Each structure stands twice: as C-alpha cells, then as structure tokens.
Image (cartoon, rainbow, N blue to C red; front, side):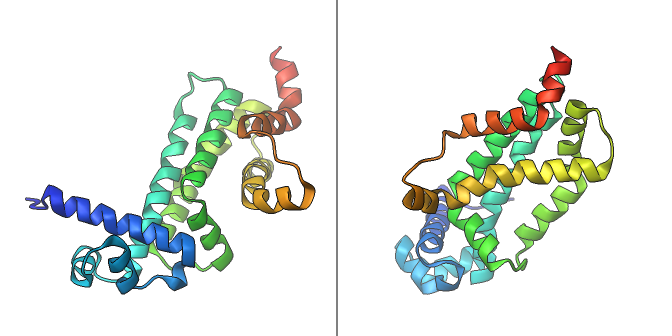
Length: 202
C-alpha cells in the first residue's frame, strides 16, 4: 500500500520544479542536491528521501519530457484521421511537448551522452514503436514501403520541425525575422513533401 501523503507528493513536485529551474539556468552539470533543496525550500534529506541521488533526480526530470513525447505518438494510431492530418497533428503535438521543456532537450542534444534510464527508455520506445507508427502514416501518404525511403522522409520531417525551434532565438537576432507560427511551418513542410500525394487524393 502506498502511504505517500498529499503533503509529501506536493514536496516531491516542488523538488522536480526546482530541478527544472536549475537545469534551465545552469545545465545538468550545475545541479547539486544542496542547490535543489535551496531552490525548493526544503532540506537536503527530503530530496534524498524522494530521489536518492542527483542522477535519479535528473532521470525523473528527463522522464517528464520523455512521457510527453511518447504520448504524442498515440495520434498516429488513429486511422480514422486521414494520413496527412494525422501526421500534422503528431508533428504539432511533438514540437509542443518539446516547447514545454526546451532546455532539457537542448542540453541532451548538446551533451549527447546517453546515461539516464529515461533516455534509454525513449530510445527503446522509438525502436520498438515510434518509428513504426511514423512509417505506417508516411507509407499511407506516399504508397511506398521501402524502409530506407520512409526513414529518410521521417528524419527530414522531424529535423525540419525541430531545427527552427532550436535556432529560433539566434535566427531572429541574425536576420531580424521571425519564423512563421508552427502550424504554418508544418503545412509548408507537408506541402513540399506530399504535394504529389495530395494531387492523387483530389
């Protein structure tokens, strides 16, 4: 039986939020248990009680992003939605999950090392389910089944969706322009890739 009280649950949430704030400001390397305790206004013992170590705490924080990203793939299971619209909704939800915690994803990309169980879980999910779900939808759009073709298209779609989000602040500083809103970007992207499929449907 789980005996965690509402008060303890609230403290755990405070600790996670404090960790998120610290990672945003200082990166993974700047996080310490003492800093987290100070940020959350709790004692170090309570942080240790709930998470045990800095690595376990960071793993729990990454898990928040991983869970959000995994949830977006459920839209690809809904064959009642036509493939292009399904793919559009997926890309919108996927990038919105990223925007909730961009600093975590950016740090993971910059540091590159896969050391946390939550990262490994996401890689396993992508290999076992995520890639297949995307393949199924893209295959319905273009009518091709060659794995290499589908993988290239999927990587281009995800890359073209993510890159503007990663470079947006720098892009605006350098060019003085802002990227269009996300939905318009994705519509342009899908028009570019699937214009032939669209014409065949009409």
